[in-house]
Amino acid sequence: PAALAVDMMRPAFHYTPRFGWVNDPNGLVYADGEWHLFYQADYETTLHGNMSWGHAVSTDLVHWQELGVAISYDQHEQIFSGSAVVDKDCTSGLCAKAGEPVMIAIYTSYDQVPDPNSPLDDQGHSTNRHFQSQHIASSTDRGRTWTKYAHNPVLDKKMYEFRDPKVSRRGDHWLMLVQKSEEHVLQFYKSSDLIKWGDGKGGDGPAGEFTGLGATGGVWECPDMFELPVDGDAKNTKWVLIVNINPGSRFGWGSAAQFFIGQFDGDTFHADGDYSWLDWGADNYATITWDSAPNGEVVAIGWMSNWQYTQVTPASTWRNAFTVPRLLELVTIDGKVRVVQNPVKNIDSLRDLSNAVHQSNLAVANDYTEPAIRGRALDIVVEFDAGSAAEFGVKVYQGEHQETLIGYDKAKGQVFIDRRISGTVNFDALFPDRHSADLPLVGNKLKLRILVDHGSVEVFANRGEVAITDVIFPDPFKDGVSFYALNGTATVVSVDVYPMKTIHGL
Ligand code: FRU
Image (tube, rainbow, N blue to C red):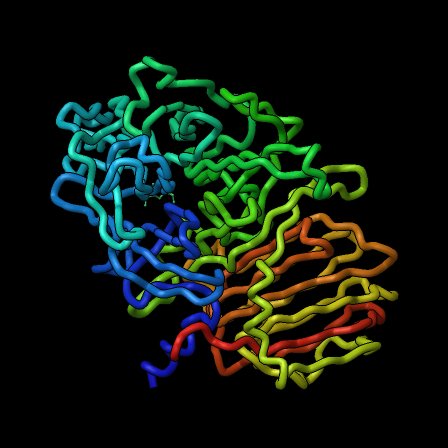
């Protein structure tokens, strides 16, 4: 029955809205023992429409309580992406009582009414462009209810594409990263009180800008920047700058998160070298990190979809999920500082240990093995010895005419997800494909952690220096798991397959 199939497609352990559409994570902030996940939401349809901020909270980054609309669109504005901070000392003056903490959301307000003076197109018709400016809202009840600031906007350049403010506390002031999206200029601003960003008085106003580097095949969106120790050494830190881009991913289409490693001088960011991609799959976008994490750790989450096809994917009463929260670290590998990402530790608590399957020293030499293991929501930890095989890997959601491969191509030296026959793929010609990332074997061996859920596959390879995230739309009844090798023999040195418990009552 349709209703059953629909519920079976809801991820077991990835956050999804009960109803409606979601895109970017917004306002990620940790406060009073709660991880806040705000996000772009349309509660009325399953398409990107009138955007508000939805809200969910978690105490463990695993189980989420959906709290509904936090900041709503109205006849004047839509609430586009942005960030949230706890204004501990009430610099904004928006707290309930002097000196008390207040949560401040900084978001892009998208004018509902197009600019009547929009430029004209070739035919002399208005292009109907909408102004975007930065607004704030405050909450004195832990993000449950919000009041829009009476004197918004707080930063307005009368621009059509100026968005996604990411604010954090830096020393004695607030720092904002915000995109002049069409120009590919990331602008830094400073403020003493979260309200004055532009007047240039008292240090408030524009600081540096970051431009001229990176991928520029689309608009720049959703910036983020954070400092991390290299190899855990607090005396040796580097900064990571994230610049999401849409379109203009490495595939030449669709949205993706690029990043740079470098230094922040207090006013602007200086890249050490070239940019790279945070994820080598197609479905990890608008990736940003939590402000004020309890131990200074950097935890990121992304929207698990792609603007290329997100409005035409199979969906019922809700659409889109987020990645699992991921811990980001800087690790030197083969002499190079790399961003390494892995699922936060608490994800392990969902493993159903009593139904886990463990195997070791399994020789694999077949293109097809009858799956001995089944499951729709799994955490797979596997180590392969490449042996003589030209290609080897794991198949999930395997059944007649259906499989998603997580494999390794030895000649190319690449790990991949292949979703060409992963289920429903025909809604966009660019969807069915293989997404590969360079990764050398270590002593002829490869380690993979694979999180499989009803609508997605997330792969973390070796130490996490490669992550690949793809959504899939398989027939949920074809849920086999098997190992394969082509043109030779590979060995599964060891594998643990953990069924995952669901985080909701379905
Ligand atoms: C990125 C984005 C943001 C914008 C939001 C609107 O996916 O386009 O730049 O603020 O989505 O929903």
